Image (cartoon, rainbow, N blue to C red; front, side, top):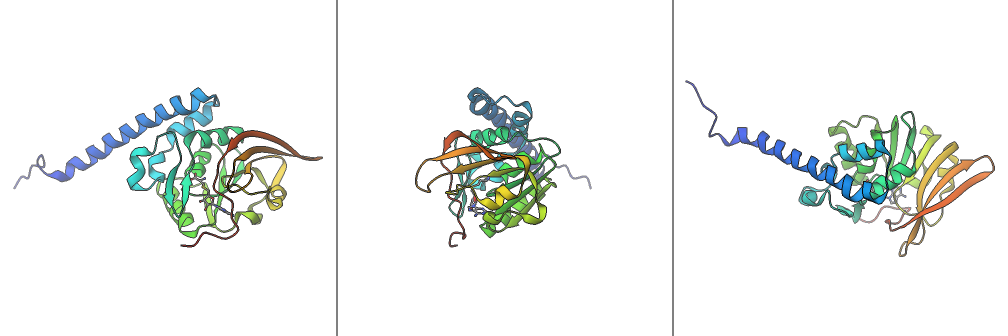
Length: 234
Ligand code: SAH
Protein backbone atom coordinates (compact mmCIF):
# COMPACT_ATOMS: atom_id res chain seq x y z
CA UNK A 1 0.00 0.00 0.00
CA UNK A 2 1.24 3.44 -0.83
CA UNK A 3 1.35 5.87 2.08
CA UNK A 4 1.52 9.52 1.28
CA UNK A 5 3.28 11.63 3.86
CA UNK A 6 1.81 15.04 3.06
CA UNK A 7 -0.45 15.26 6.11
CA UNK A 8 1.95 13.59 8.48
CA UNK A 9 3.15 16.13 11.07
CA UNK A 10 6.61 14.52 11.26
CA UNK A 11 8.06 15.62 7.90
CA UNK A 12 7.15 19.22 8.68
CA UNK A 13 9.54 19.31 11.61
CA UNK A 14 12.84 19.45 9.69
CA UNK A 15 11.43 22.24 7.54
CA UNK A 16 10.44 24.27 10.61
CA UNK A 17 13.83 23.64 12.12
CA UNK A 18 15.57 24.77 8.94
CA UNK A 19 13.47 27.94 8.90
CA UNK A 20 14.42 28.60 12.52
CA UNK A 21 18.11 28.17 11.70
CA UNK A 22 17.79 30.67 8.84
CA UNK A 23 16.10 33.15 11.20
CA UNK A 24 18.90 32.69 13.77
CA UNK A 25 21.57 33.16 11.07
CA UNK A 26 19.87 36.38 9.96
CA UNK A 27 19.79 37.65 13.56
CA UNK A 28 23.45 36.75 13.89
CA UNK A 29 24.46 38.78 10.85
CA UNK A 30 22.47 41.72 12.22
CA UNK A 31 24.14 41.28 15.63
CA UNK A 32 27.58 41.50 14.01
CA UNK A 33 26.64 44.57 12.00
CA UNK A 34 24.70 46.54 14.61
CA UNK A 35 26.39 45.59 17.88
CA UNK A 36 29.96 44.78 16.91
CA UNK A 37 31.15 46.32 13.63
CA UNK A 38 29.51 49.69 14.38
CA UNK A 39 31.32 49.80 17.71
CA UNK A 40 34.68 49.64 16.00
CA UNK A 41 35.68 45.96 15.76
CA UNK A 42 37.27 45.64 12.32
CA UNK A 43 39.13 42.30 12.44
CA UNK A 44 37.51 40.34 9.60
CA UNK A 45 38.35 36.92 11.06
CA UNK A 46 36.72 37.84 14.36
CA UNK A 47 33.61 39.27 12.67
CA UNK A 48 33.31 36.11 10.55
CA UNK A 49 33.66 33.88 13.63
CA UNK A 50 30.95 35.87 15.44
CA UNK A 51 28.69 35.49 12.39
CA UNK A 52 29.31 31.74 12.29
CA UNK A 53 29.03 30.48 15.88
CA UNK A 54 25.40 29.61 16.81
CA UNK A 55 25.06 31.56 20.07
CA UNK A 56 21.52 30.24 20.56
CA UNK A 57 22.96 26.74 21.04
CA UNK A 58 24.84 27.96 24.14
CA UNK A 59 21.92 29.52 26.02
CA UNK A 60 19.15 27.62 27.84
CA UNK A 61 16.25 26.77 25.51
CA UNK A 62 13.94 29.34 27.17
CA UNK A 63 16.38 32.15 26.39
CA UNK A 64 17.01 31.35 22.75
CA UNK A 65 14.83 34.12 21.36
CA UNK A 66 17.15 36.58 23.17
CA UNK A 67 20.38 34.90 22.04
CA UNK A 68 21.30 37.65 19.56
CA UNK A 69 20.27 40.61 21.72
CA UNK A 70 22.77 43.20 22.93
CA UNK A 71 23.42 41.90 26.45
CA UNK A 72 24.54 39.08 28.72
CA UNK A 73 22.11 36.19 29.42
CA UNK A 74 21.71 33.81 32.36
CA UNK A 75 23.04 30.28 31.83
CA UNK A 76 22.16 28.82 35.26
CA UNK A 77 24.16 28.45 38.49
CA UNK A 78 24.10 32.25 38.87
CA UNK A 79 26.39 32.69 35.86
CA UNK A 80 25.99 34.45 32.53
CA UNK A 81 27.11 34.23 28.91
CA UNK A 82 28.83 37.55 28.13
CA UNK A 83 27.38 40.24 25.86
CA UNK A 84 28.29 39.50 22.20
CA UNK A 85 30.20 42.79 21.88
CA UNK A 86 32.39 41.94 24.89
CA UNK A 87 33.16 38.49 23.44
CA UNK A 88 34.11 40.10 20.12
CA UNK A 89 36.13 42.86 21.80
CA UNK A 90 38.13 40.45 23.97
CA UNK A 91 38.68 38.05 21.07
CA UNK A 92 39.94 40.80 18.77
CA UNK A 93 42.18 42.33 21.45
CA UNK A 94 43.72 38.90 22.05
CA UNK A 95 44.90 38.98 18.40
CA UNK A 96 44.32 35.23 17.80
CA UNK A 97 46.61 33.52 15.26
CA UNK A 98 45.77 30.26 13.44
CA UNK A 99 48.58 28.31 15.14
CA UNK A 100 47.91 29.58 18.69
CA UNK A 101 47.15 27.50 21.78
CA UNK A 102 44.85 29.51 24.02
CA UNK A 103 43.77 29.06 27.65
CA UNK A 104 40.38 30.34 28.77
CA UNK A 105 39.42 30.74 32.43
CA UNK A 106 35.63 30.63 32.95
CA UNK A 107 34.12 28.30 30.32
CA UNK A 108 30.55 29.18 31.34
CA UNK A 109 28.38 28.21 28.36
CA UNK A 110 31.35 27.41 26.10
CA UNK A 111 30.41 30.20 23.65
CA UNK A 112 33.64 32.20 23.95
CA UNK A 113 35.60 28.95 23.56
CA UNK A 114 33.63 28.15 20.39
CA UNK A 115 34.39 31.59 18.92
CA UNK A 116 38.10 31.08 19.63
CA UNK A 117 38.01 27.50 18.31
CA UNK A 118 37.49 28.77 14.77
CA UNK A 119 40.41 31.20 15.02
CA UNK A 120 43.21 29.25 16.71
CA UNK A 121 44.65 25.72 16.78
CA UNK A 122 43.66 24.63 20.29
CA UNK A 123 41.57 26.00 23.14
CA UNK A 124 41.88 24.82 26.75
CA UNK A 125 39.07 26.02 28.99
CA UNK A 126 38.61 25.72 32.76
CA UNK A 127 35.30 26.13 34.62
CA UNK A 128 34.93 25.97 38.40
CA UNK A 129 31.22 25.00 38.40
CA UNK A 130 31.36 21.32 37.44
CA UNK A 131 27.84 21.02 35.93
CA UNK A 132 28.56 24.03 33.69
CA UNK A 133 31.85 22.48 32.59
CA UNK A 134 30.06 19.24 31.74
CA UNK A 135 27.29 20.96 29.83
CA UNK A 136 29.70 23.17 27.88
CA UNK A 137 31.89 20.19 27.02
CA UNK A 138 28.86 18.25 25.74
CA UNK A 139 27.58 21.23 23.71
CA UNK A 140 30.99 21.91 22.17
CA UNK A 141 31.33 18.25 21.22
CA UNK A 142 27.79 18.07 19.81
CA UNK A 143 28.45 21.14 17.66
CA UNK A 144 31.75 19.77 16.34
CA UNK A 145 34.29 21.98 18.14
CA UNK A 146 36.86 19.20 18.36
CA UNK A 147 39.80 21.48 19.20
CA UNK A 148 38.43 22.62 22.59
CA UNK A 149 39.32 20.79 25.81
CA UNK A 150 37.25 21.58 28.90
CA UNK A 151 38.20 20.86 32.48
CA UNK A 152 36.25 21.35 35.72
CA UNK A 153 38.60 23.01 38.18
CA UNK A 154 40.04 26.18 39.66
CA UNK A 155 41.38 28.57 37.05
CA UNK A 156 43.74 30.18 39.59
CA UNK A 157 46.00 27.19 39.05
CA UNK A 158 45.83 27.36 35.26
CA UNK A 159 46.49 24.23 33.19
CA UNK A 160 50.20 23.51 33.82
CA UNK A 161 50.38 20.28 31.77
CA UNK A 162 49.29 22.13 28.62
CA UNK A 163 51.38 25.31 29.23
CA UNK A 164 52.88 27.47 27.89
CA UNK A 165 50.09 29.27 26.02
CA UNK A 166 50.29 31.88 23.27
CA UNK A 167 47.34 33.69 24.82
CA UNK A 168 45.13 33.55 27.91
CA UNK A 169 41.61 34.96 28.20
CA UNK A 170 40.00 35.31 31.62
CA UNK A 171 36.21 35.78 31.55
CA UNK A 172 35.67 36.20 35.30
CA UNK A 173 37.21 38.96 37.41
CA UNK A 174 40.02 38.33 39.91
CA UNK A 175 41.12 41.12 42.26
CA UNK A 176 44.72 40.65 41.11
CA UNK A 177 46.23 38.99 38.05
CA UNK A 178 46.89 35.35 39.08
CA UNK A 179 50.64 34.67 39.02
CA UNK A 180 50.18 31.05 37.84
CA UNK A 181 48.56 32.37 34.67
CA UNK A 182 51.42 34.80 34.03
CA UNK A 183 53.85 31.89 34.50
CA UNK A 184 51.94 29.79 31.96
CA UNK A 185 52.10 32.47 29.28
CA UNK A 186 54.77 32.23 26.56
CA UNK A 187 57.32 35.01 26.17
CA UNK A 188 55.55 37.67 24.09
CA UNK A 189 52.18 36.08 24.93
CA UNK A 190 48.98 38.10 25.45
CA UNK A 191 46.46 37.97 28.26
CA UNK A 192 43.02 39.59 28.49
CA UNK A 193 41.82 39.84 32.07
CA UNK A 194 39.20 41.96 33.86
CA UNK A 195 40.67 43.00 37.22
CA UNK A 196 38.86 44.66 40.09
CA UNK A 197 36.50 44.39 43.05
CA UNK A 198 33.58 41.94 42.93
CA UNK A 199 30.95 44.60 43.56
CA UNK A 200 32.31 47.41 41.47
CA UNK A 201 33.55 48.32 38.04
CA UNK A 202 36.53 46.35 36.87
CA UNK A 203 39.05 47.30 34.25
CA UNK A 204 39.76 45.00 31.33
CA UNK A 205 43.54 44.72 30.89
CA UNK A 206 45.55 43.61 27.90
CA UNK A 207 48.84 42.25 29.23
CA UNK A 208 51.89 41.23 27.24
CA UNK A 209 54.73 39.19 28.69
CA UNK A 210 57.97 41.06 27.96
CA UNK A 211 61.52 40.14 29.00
CA UNK A 212 61.52 42.97 31.51
CA UNK A 213 58.08 42.15 32.96
CA UNK A 214 54.42 42.56 32.12
CA UNK A 215 53.36 45.31 29.75
CA UNK A 216 49.97 46.45 31.02
CA UNK A 217 47.25 48.38 29.22
CA UNK A 218 43.77 49.13 30.52
CA UNK A 219 41.41 48.89 27.56
CA UNK A 220 37.80 48.98 28.79
CA UNK A 221 35.76 49.32 32.00
CA UNK A 222 33.65 46.16 32.39
CA UNK A 223 31.50 44.12 34.81
CA UNK A 224 32.22 40.42 35.07
CA UNK A 225 31.24 37.82 37.66
CA UNK A 226 34.00 37.37 40.25
CA UNK A 227 36.74 34.81 39.83
CA UNK A 228 36.19 32.65 42.89
CA UNK A 229 38.35 30.01 44.54
CA UNK A 230 35.47 27.68 45.34
CA UNK A 231 32.39 27.02 43.20
CA UNK A 232 29.07 28.57 44.40
CA UNK A 233 26.77 26.22 46.35
CA UNK A 234 24.42 24.09 44.22
N1 SAH B 1 33.15 32.66 28.82
C1 SAH B 1 31.80 32.31 29.23
C2 SAH B 1 31.19 33.28 30.21
C3 SAH B 1 31.85 33.21 31.50
S1 SAH B 1 30.97 33.75 32.92
C4 SAH B 1 30.88 32.11 28.05
O1 SAH B 1 31.29 32.32 26.91
O2 SAH B 1 29.75 31.69 28.28
C5 SAH B 1 32.32 33.45 34.03
C6 SAH B 1 32.53 32.01 34.41
O3 SAH B 1 33.71 31.94 35.22
C7 SAH B 1 31.40 31.42 35.25
O4 SAH B 1 30.87 30.29 34.63
C8 SAH B 1 32.09 31.08 36.57
O5 SAH B 1 31.59 29.91 37.19
C9 SAH B 1 33.54 30.90 36.15
N2 SAH B 1 34.55 31.02 37.20
C10 SAH B 1 34.55 31.84 38.29
N3 SAH B 1 35.67 31.64 39.02
C11 SAH B 1 36.39 30.68 38.38
C12 SAH B 1 37.64 30.05 38.62
N4 SAH B 1 38.37 30.32 39.71
N5 SAH B 1 38.09 29.11 37.75
C13 SAH B 1 37.35 28.79 36.65
N6 SAH B 1 36.16 29.35 36.37
C14 SAH B 1 35.68 30.28 37.20
